[in-house]
Image (cartoon, rainbow, N blue to C red; front, side, top):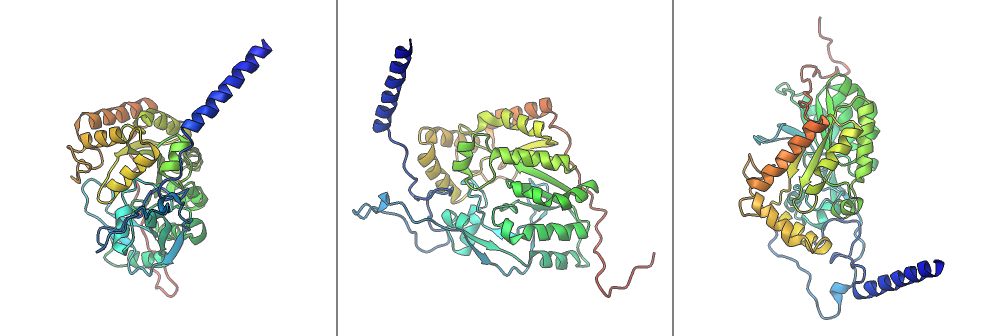
Length: 382
């Protein structure tokens, strides 16, 4: 019997080695860089010249590119509160301490904004970052303006406030400290487990109805997450962060975002279940959005990492966007249209109801807003 077991194991090993010889391990993506989401670094849409890689006959495309390190440039911002009038958003103002995002999520809808800096929405977006160290001071100035009317301020709506460089720069924490001092309501969206560092501030804010946090979880598959959002916290760490914030009394919710049909849509119920077990209060979702340069970046990523599913994924995306790869219509850009989009919306609704994630959104309190007195200010008479 032992001989038979040994023989079977030996034959399996030989078959494995033979298969590997026929189909070797996949090589690095064309960028030649591990730990980065984008495959290329094509010029932004405003540049007069486009730069593309070509084979010069000397095997230049086969040589891995040099490691691209993250660089951070100080941006002397003149204002910090960004306002919007988008009818499909639940907030009208936000603060972004950084431009670009080291998380490197290949699908990130903020990538095209790097073109305004004369940089590529590809690798530049996740390697050439901008920090605004004067963000907290600017915020104080704007909150003290006599014309300022408090409404919920959002963070994480463009680039992640808890991306890796926040560990060193701590600009997000400074902003949160200002908001707490002014008793100003704050809603955070993040993929960063670093948010747990600020529980000491967010906890007291939440106790007074001034803070809530939403975590974006795209997949529970660690391998897929590493390829698609390489420097974001792992799915497990995000779930642990939900549990930690919930335990501290901070309302948390989960966003299945983005839902990518044919790639991660089969995980919807599993993601919601794990988030509910971790203590999430509510749930939401966003369909994959591919505006401007993201269309090409995402197609390149599919061809590199999941070539067997690339055509199907893009076909399903077009079916949800009226035959196009993206439709910017205000009321459907987040959800898509058609039977596939309707089915996904139905699944989210049913799973949320079953798991107790369909509770009304937490409403933050704007009535407590008070600029704290400064040295030399005359005290108000009560």
